[in-house]
Image (cartoon, rainbow, N blue to C red; front, side):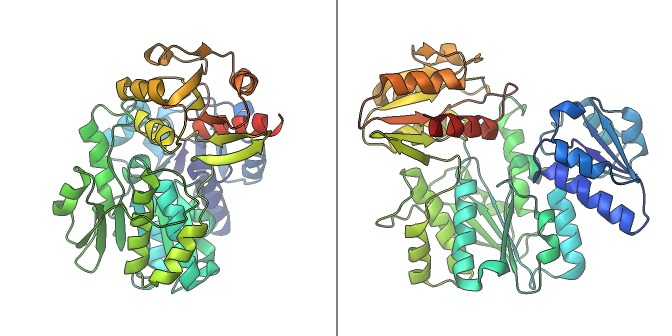
Length: 430
């Protein structure tokens, strides 16, 4: 029996795509049973996904709970990245030495059954901040050289690689954004290029220590040989010391300024440099890369310009769930902004963010619920996102910037992508 542990709510997410992939494979081969469990009830999950899964006779859905009996019976456990190691069920799985993987692990395993790493190289990108931007830009740079259909981008960027597995052919290139949650369940990935953008404080509400968080991140180098490449950020004191963790050729990158970029923010010069170095190693010309970089507008939910309305600019930076990310966002503007921030603690110190807000913000609106809000400077507490957007609009004047850059999480109330979607909808309705 294969156990999908955590279906998740995203139609293109790890749990959902893995569940549907195993359901199809099992039906095709008249194979083993697939059990899918999630702590959320059916009403809380993506309804079209549930309808699809219910069509398969070999699938059993167990919703609103998990069962230890499923852990004991499973031949393979496919863990949704959102399920922590502290889960009593995952602890039991470790105790019983059950193999645990995720959708990326399945993808790599299936890909290597057909193609070697020389035929279809995988470029893996991780880091605390900037990995989505670096991943998306890397994909665009490689597509400019190899062609749109020959480069596949997935992982933590919002698309499970199992979605495009059937489209991969010899000579294609895979670009994967990998969070620490995805890396922790990969046993020997052997990435041709492993890119590490930076290492900053994060996820202290989910990890016992920074060392534990770093250990998962460093799994990106597992399986690399002298034929592979590790690209490290020389401007990051922690990352540049990772040179000892891989037998691959190590290449350092530093901030690279490109004139007339659409990307906003000093921090994005580092992300550009990272993607540029990957392109260089993959044979893309300097001229071609610079053209792509100048035209690259960024990734949704990361300092994304949503709308200019009656002289006000609205930016969605909902993925800024750490103080460092929110500070970078504030510093990317040359004038004081109206900021929507606040939420729940990730057990990270907010002192530096507080100082930056006092210097760079003219009006602060704090989202509720928010157990971290008392660590922010004094601001206006809002009822919900609708109230925050409305109040920010009412105090704004022509020429103002209204920025959503929370600096903390909003979980368990709402994840950052749902929060951003809500903000965008409200801004467009003004």
